[in-house]
Amino acid sequence: MNGMTIGQYYPVNSRIHRLDPRVKLVAAFIYITMLFLVKNFWGYLFAAFFVSLTIYASKVPIIYMLRGLKNIIFIITFMLVMNIFFTKGERVLFSIWKISVTMEGLILSARMAVRLILLVVGTSILTLTTSPIQLTDGIEYLLKPFKRFGVPAHEIAMMMSIALRFIPTLVEELDKIMKAQKARGADFDTGGLMKKAKSLIPLLVPLFISAFRRADELAMAMEARCYRGDYNRTRMKEMKLYPHDYRFMAVVGAFCIAVIGSRFV
Amino acid sequence: MSIEIKNLSYIYNKGTAFEQTAIHDINISIQKGEFIGLIGHTGSGKSTLIQHLNALLKPSTGHILLDGEDINADSSKLKRIRQRVGLVFQYPEHQLFEMTVYKDVAFGPENMGLSKEETDKRVKAALENVGVDESIHEKSPFELSGGQKRRVAIAGVLAMEPEVLVLDEPAAGLDPRGRDEVLGLIKSMHSNLGITVILVSHSMEDVSRLVNRVIVMHQGRIAMDGALNEVFSRVEEIEALGLRAPSISYLMKGLNERGFGLPQDIYKVEDAVDCLLKVFQPGVCK
Image (cartoon, rainbow over all chains, first blue to last red; front, top):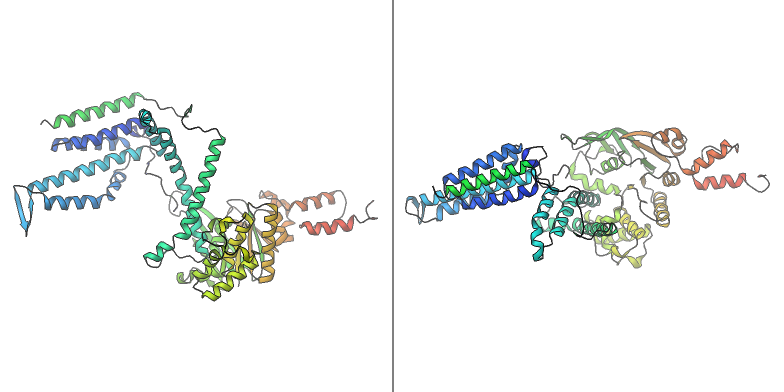
């Protein structure tokens, strides 16, 4: 249980790490949108180039970026198979029984795979270079305009930071409870599925009770310090845009123009 | 049952950047029926040490022998070892989970695969031993008071009929009455059930009232190990480790410095009362 990292933040000091979280969030959003506007080979090339450039500037080892792909390998494979075998087209390469593999299917599935990979790698740059706290700050700021429509921006951000803050605490607590129940002869490793599920009760009940107790205590402590939500609250770290933020925005703008331009090639 | 701890070391997060040695080369031998107080600062390695005694942690190096047998030699015997060495964690009431007090105490015996009759017998005996009335057996453990909860949790370990009982700060967070009750309970369990008891604490008062041997830990090593009187007579050493001797010994020391000529080896309030009453008898005190 020890040494667990929250989120996947990779703490080094790089140009990308220093960027304002709001800029990074918006850039990630624009990047995703652009990926879906890509129409041909050139568009993918631009996207790949943009991602590689950002990865290079972020100083995060490429292996961390690719790690995110592990989780979607199943989806990619599934999608590849479905598209290769079930896309109808003119240029039939070969047929097995009633299923025929076409050139169109092959191209379509390749495009989908590349798009997914670029999507995952690109967005993982955001979480790798932005600490969870910065991320919630950025989200809070960006959600502010939606307050008018009843979106509780501050509350959402506060809940996110509290949840992040308590993950390690709860992991520690779980470890303790697990040991205590083991000392009473509990067995979490052997037995069938039903038995294993049942063996979780002695863990989950105490864990939930302690989580609720902590939540209660935290709420009290916050109220005791006059927490009233967003109202008149100032921050320790004001978010401010610096020249390097504007430079990055210019790069993102260039990327957008390149992708949109590539649609007309 | 005797426990032999040989050259035990434990390193947390071995092989990572967070590597930290919690215990350095510890040797302790514990005989059947002893009542041991294990004291030391937070982070001195007490809790890490006791988790080795029932194989919750595996030594980085060294061995733990129960009656001459290495407890980590055969992992299929883990349950048996955890039954023989009962470990009561700090704030044990946080591990309660069942619908009723009875069922919660029965969790241990049931895990051992005992028959219904045997489980029933043990649960009732354990609850009686910790002084929980039969009228509470069918109540939810979450309805009880703090002291009661803790006693129920201790009964949960006791119902496994361990030969050695290890308690980590059993009186922490209780009010004075709950504290006296729990400590009294532990004392009577030691004398009535004839089990070996290891009491982890940083309260010298609690330790001096109960135990007959004290082990002091400091920065993962054994700093002192000996009979109660022997250890507490070395006040300077204890203070050098950032701990204190029992408060009553400071009173006795102060009185002696003012020429009262009292015995030096008094570490329990009860003994001090007896001694002082003798000195201050009407007629003696002028």
